[in-house]
Length: 227
Length: 361
Image (cartoon, rainbow over all chains, first blue to last red; front, side, top):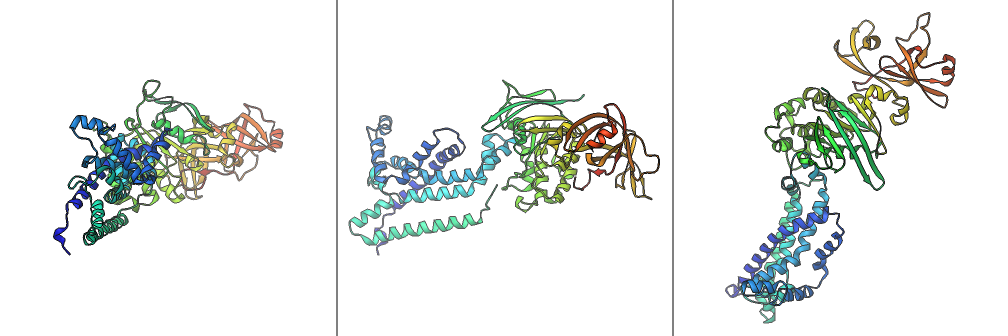
């Protein structure tokens, strides 16, 4: 087995993509999940459905529309091109954008059920003790949501790591820019380099397994806060 | 100078509305009493600023009207809930200090050492919340609310989840807070025994409306409120002072508005107060004192004030013994005695229940 012929680029790129995506998703997913739990707006059902869409849509459909949207004539890609000189399609930034959309439900849903379980009372209690909304969120809700955040992060990370269809449509296959691990595996299989495909696949498999074991064991140790 | 809490709230929910216009003394313990669904908790939430509605002022300061609305976190209130609502991720000490840290330094009047002493929390400070008993949790929750140095303490059935033993542990603390820290308390409950042990002013709510409000002696003996208070509690609440202990006969003599009552020996020092409850069914009436001896020890000289509506064979008579007293007699007796308002009458009291102690009232 020739390890030296193994290109670590795609692995590194995948990890980068997953990390950046998870960070963005936490920043977006927290207010979205909070809003879904606490709003009385009629828009709630619609937004909830939009968030869940990537769960049911074939990645190629999502990828197709993203490709158009992020391309030089798309309503996101266009302005970006005017600003920076290049569109978002077939770039790392474009991949981050696509992954964020694609993995959104995997972050929003665990957070939503966590916030739902926590309910309104801790916020009210904190407010009665003089805490502003932000203060109450950071001092009470966040610590009580640790389990939910851990689950959301892991699901978001692992799901981004494993995505294939959307990446292929939006990012193509540019080494160092958009060629992530799942695409690299596909490439190796295409050219019948099964050994490399094996190493990468087994690596991803082991990595995913270990990360899940870690999460479940941490989850077991974290106290469950039932209010 | 007596200060007041004024509250005018109107809240409309499907199937429920609250419509109150209250003026309460901003001192002592005011108990809001009523069956579940009567709007007690909603009233409390309005006072806390958790529902936006109406008008509220306390001790001359307006907290909400058409233009002003002081949000919950800026109100000088402390809240204690039925389910302590302690923060499970914080230890007892951090829970106690949560509100304290968020109270401006110049507003802080109560400090950790004092609250820990009053509520006897020394041994609990480093415990985690999960290791506390129900009663301990409520004490910590009370302490946490007090450490914001509130001008008003709102308590929503704080003892409902506790067994009788734990209740009797906490009630003295609530009394102590009111006395030592002089923070007015609004206390919501549907338990009559809590009412009797705590109340100074009583508010009776029913279907979102105030049925009656006033000092407990008057509200309790109001013959029109029998329904709201319930048969088993209908009667008079009297505040007496311990006069003397008669150890030979095992009796404590009490002063009540210049007249005397005797109860079984009490472990209370002479000069201290004792609240008693006299069930209306335990009071019988006579136009004269009996010529011979009587086994009844407690006889009060009263005047007939009001005669209530007949309920089956019986009727309630409201008496004036300096404070209101209530007697339930038969219609037959009413006609035999030929009672008229203003008439002098002797009330023979067959049983007196002490409220301060653990007896079930």
